[in-house]
Image 1 (tube, rainbow, N blue to C red):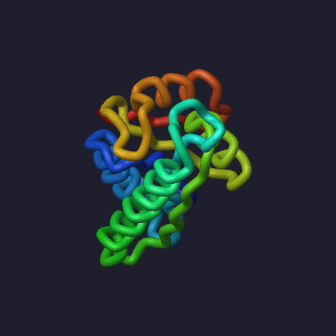
Image 2 (cartoon, rainbow, N blue to C red):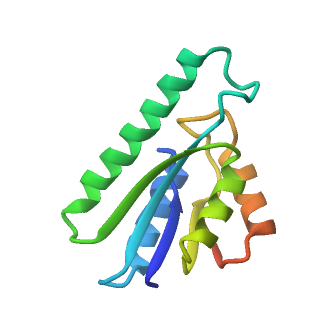
Length: 135
């Protein structure tokens, strides 16, 4: 695989998905780590301060994950987006012409209130790219 998108939120499932993606990526390939934070317009956030904290936490999670992987010599891109996680994952995978989307099967996200399983189910149902769900 030349380009793999990994939905990453710091959960155990996301860690397993990242490990699997590392095993599948070509030496010259690129891993894209994506964290998605709910939009401030969602009813998830009471105020803007909470949104800022969640976005900062997402950036730190991605940064820490990249530092951990960096020693393996892989090309890694980290991204933090806002909106509906499943829609963002699908849209980004299409725009970036990813070969595969890798997600954890379940767990509670550290950067949002949605359950990882519900995001994975939507991505599997609507993506036009191959999707791997890691348990």
